[in-house]
Image 1 (cartoon, rainbow, N blue to C red):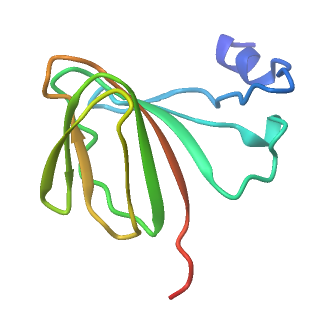
Image 2: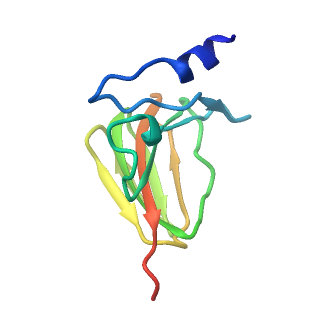
Image 3: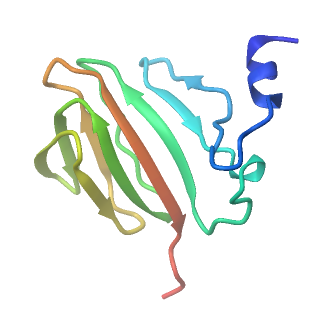
Length: 124
C-alpha cells in the first residue's frame, strides 16, 4: 500500500475534513479536493479544494458551469476576472458566477495557497 492510499484510508476525526490525494499539474499547480464523504459533512451542497500556485506560475484561465468562491490563505498575486485585474493576498475572498473566465498569477514572488468552493449555478 502506498503512502497516498494509506492517507486516503486513514480514519478521520469528527471535525476534520480530509483531502483526496494531491494532483500535480504540469505547470506545478497542485490541487487536492476535500473528501466530504469521509467527513462529518457527507452531504454538503458544495465542493471544495485547496490549490497552490508556485511563484511565477498561473492557475491558467478557467471557465465552467459552476459558481465559485476563492479564499486566499497565503501569498499575494494578481487575479484576472473577465479581463479585470486586482491584487489579492491573505484573507482576500473573491468569487464569480458561472461562465466567467478567471485566472490567478503568483507574480509577487510567493506561492499562493487558495481554498476554492464551488456549487451548481441555479437554473435561470
